[in-house]
Amino acid sequence: MSVPAKKRPAGEKRRRAAHFALKRVKYATCPKCKKSKMPHAVCPFCGSYKGKEVLKSHLDKKELKKAQKQKVRAAEKQQGR
Image 1 (cartoon, rainbow, N blue to C red):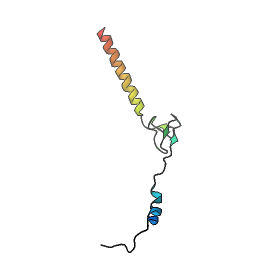
Image 2 (cartoon, helix red, strand yellow; image 1 turned 90 degrees about the vertical axis):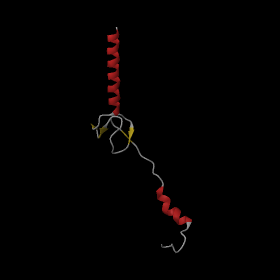
Image 3 (spheres, rainbow, N blue to C red; image 1 turned 45 degrees about the vertical axis):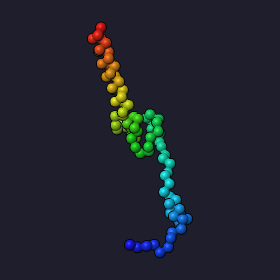
């Protein structure tokens, strides 16, 4: 097994590792819903990319479930009366 000829100084180690720091994430605003999102990515809130709807958003699914529950509850109330 090879052994280094000389000990690497602490300053050299720090200079080498200077670029290892995490960069601050830059966000963009969605033109449709005006919420922050990652640049060059689909908006997680409205599901649009470059002005076109690419994905059905999870908010739409929640609204659909809520509407279905309200319909079921209304039907149960009418049957109970």
